[in-house]
Image (cartoon, rainbow, N blue to C red; front, side, top):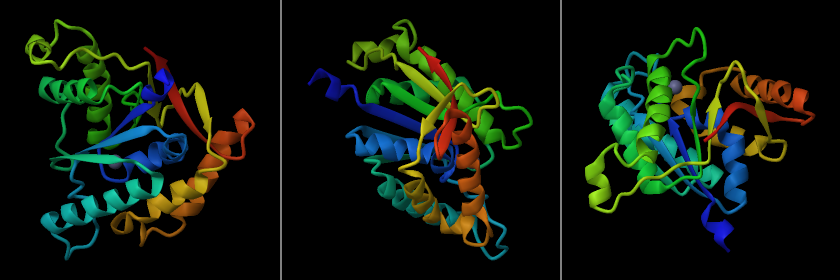
Length: 228
Ligand SMILES: [Zn+2]
């Protein structure tokens, strides 16, 4: 059953809810298929509110519990919170190294994250995470990066594929016809983000229908796929 052990995915998003929006349907499929899935949530999302009575401290706690609930819906086994402040991420060497360390630790065969090359993407954290993950993959796979880690048994790891969500130049569509409902159910857990946002589910469904159409599916999630 060597194949069984290859079923490991790492999903890295800037904020609580990004992973569900980006690839929730695909992740639900992997979970159903017995994959071991870990989430990394880089920021605490503590600026994501229009409620003037909300504090950053309370919001970050709320968003972590919403994220755990959403991950449970999809069948994700582990959620790692890095707890950086929302809106303050930069694609530093330190963040890249941190990503590389998680990649070496979890040994994922597939990695999902933001496409940092999406034009006119407003949120700086989305760009920062996308670049840090891509650069981190390079650091994770070659032994002369972080040489001390190999000496304590954290050896190099090379994922097979990288899927970038929200890509303008997507070249791969996952058929999520059977898991679109689970994606919506998981997103629903992000109450602080979506409860007052009328029509969000219809918009997510419409986008999935549009993405699927070109590939001949009832619903899809599109990615730029890099074979590594
Ligand atoms: Zn986000």
